[in-house]
Amino acid sequence: MGAEVVVTGFGVRTVFGAGAPALRHGVFGGRPAFAPTSRFDTGPYRTPMAAAAPDGADRLSLRQALKNCGAEALDMAGLRAGIEAAVLVGAAGDYTTVTHFWRSGGDGVSYADAVPAVLAEAVAGDLGLRGPRFAFTNACVASSAAIVHACRLIASGRSEVAVCAGGYLVEEEVFAKFDSGRALARDGAVRPFSADRSGLLLGDGVAAIVLESAGHARSRGARPLSTVAGWGAASDAYHIAQPHPDGAGLAAAARQALRRAGDPAGATIDYVNAHGTGTRHNDVAETRGLRSVFGERAGSVPVSSTKSTTGHLLEAAGVVEFVITMLALADGVLPPTAGYTRPDPECDLDCVPHVARPADARRALTINAAFGGANTALVLERP
Image 1 (cartoon, rainbow, N blue to C red):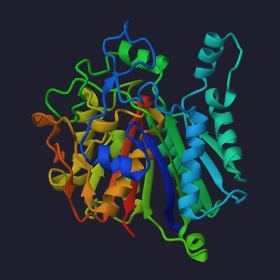
Image 2 (cartoon, rainbow, N blue to C red):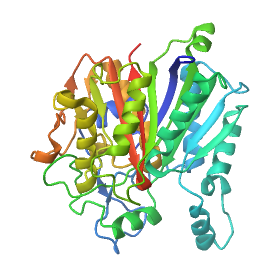
Image 3 (cartoon, rainbow, N blue to C red):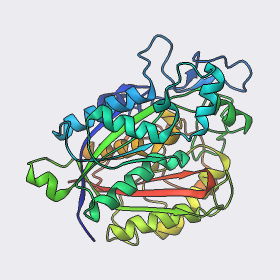
């Protein structure tokens, strides 16, 4: 099985602010953060809504936000610059470079903000870390895929320490694409798993975590925040945008993670942080995938979507939701699916509606999916 993988630090920033207290207030408090954004002119679009920091707030570049979260994660872990650590970053694809050049005429372009490979290199340099650098661009599983790969590096002995990060800050290009695809909720509310759900909304999110082999953490007296007991990744390649109707790829990734965690049937899972976009196709497919994994237990395992408060964080979704899931285990509180209205017979899960729920949860599964049929799953365990 290889080395055990543990989490020893994290840094996180969403529309609610920086750090765990902000997540506890916003996400666990069931407070949707959607409001009209003035970051760009939303007049041409079907909705002005997003979970984005307002004008006048502390606006950072993606590189700076990743650096800040990475520095917070390293500080929490008790690690300093100069160490050998893999750096794995999930970010948007290279096509953004074209937009930067087009809008700026080639002047003032930050390659670190525009090209993922350069961004990973820059973040590693900003943090003063030596070791391999990786960039992941597979959309909404980019940062969770980074975590999966880091776990493989550590379990196989190729790395002792890894910093995994991901970020997305709401901007017009991607906003316009989701709007043109009719994916955004026109009424400004994200209602995952509800019968009247009408789409997603985008949100700001950046986070970083420090992973280590358990042996390395013990050798320096570090206290693990969580154990990554299992991980998996799978692709069903069903459609360029829609998930497989039965959630086949998501179920395959979850089964991989559960087998790695020594629990093929998922009997020890006490909570699932769902991908839960609030779109018609995703939520039904995800429900079917979870039912195929958990069988008769599926209806009794609490499942919630924190995108109902933060919005969809795209490349950052996996790592931010990883941190939220870790907090749920540590605090003994499950985050709610905010905005839930009425049941959908095709999404017959325990969705933890409206308010957070106390729970003595020991193990949790966090799952993510992306365009093109890419899927990831991670099993976290409370120390």
